[in-house]
Length: 213
Image (cartoon, rainbow, N blue to C red; front, side, top):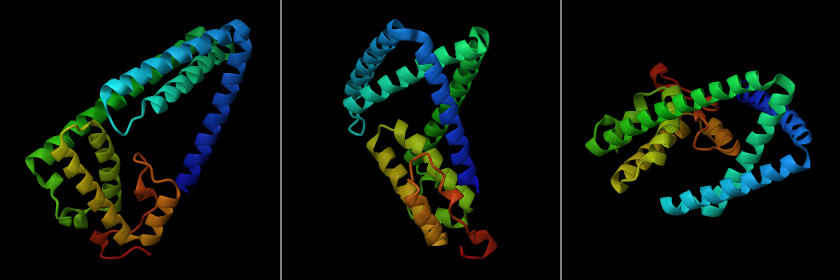
């Protein structure tokens, strides 16, 4: 039920966003849309430059460029639609609140990433490589391991740290698959992104002395 409700909520948000973007596009007119297009081109160029300077092999400058351009167009159209339907004051308040939430989430994930990286380097139990650490965790805890280590892996630059994190992530996935192969397969079929929680699909808890159905 949780994945279904999440998808329904996401569909409603997408529909609302499409309506706001359409209203914003109509209200801007031709000249405004040209300005939005120029802003998208600038954002794409800046994003491509940052990706090229970063040197991350997993981040293509072209892919980063079009993503930045699309997000820029969407944000500007949504802002324009929000101003038309709700007014500048309400739209500004919503934007400030959203930015505050994003900054808070970014700071929290950065702190988690530093903790994981430190654990991987120092060889604490959080970075153990024999897989036994996963046996005593619940499915929900293993799911959190996967989600939190995704942020840590994205922020890690040291090769040994990245290897330790990758090994730990694989051990968490192996344990989840052992608990509930069918549920684990459903998670893979749903897309299995780095920020999706496999615990929403997997059941079974060794602490309860039972295997997943």
